[in-house]
Length: 230
Image 1 (cartoon, rainbow, N blue to C red):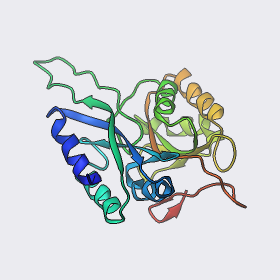
Image 2 (cartoon, helix red, strand yellow; image 1 turned 135 degrees about the vertical axis):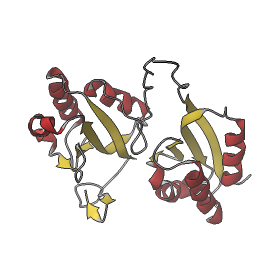
Image 3 (tube, helix red, strand yellow; image 1 turned 135 degrees about the horizontal axis):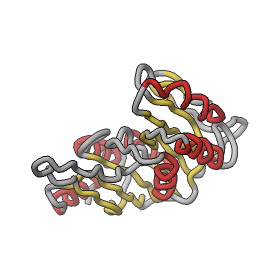
Image 4 (cartoon, helix red, strand yellow; image 1 turned 90 degrees about the vertical axis):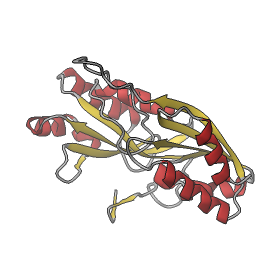
């Protein structure tokens, strides 16, 4: 069965109020796994051997139709595999009366999930828990709630070499697990704890992640965002 068809059948099996999914693709022929991961890159895919993990959300980022189109591209290149549902997060019910709805924890392996303004360090821990064990490189952001906090947060996150994302109240940075571009995971943890210590809430988002990278005569992979290398 083609991957696009597997995706269609999987969608039909879900409850109508699903919000976010984590999926696993096991590529049948291991040599094609790298190509499959490249084609699924818009879904912030991560590869571990012949297994590729990615996310889809009905609330933000690439949606179900984008998944179908990307899987159809794998089918067109005769890349075969088995698609497996790993995690499903349902959307919260509509609030009743004057009750304030609780914001659910969002999946972090796809761009721009629903806002979560809990302390940043636990959000970082949750993000790492969703990654495959051989992850090597991360591109992430922290969005804060007020422009009054920009200068202070920039100072506290200084060791991460944060960069503003246009006019948004967000700082983006890289993390490298063992070598290459970006701060170490321990430094990211410490900087986010410093922001938490001063009670400045924000949203951590894992925008891109790579696994098992082996650069040759370079300092590591480069992402292109908006035509610029990051």
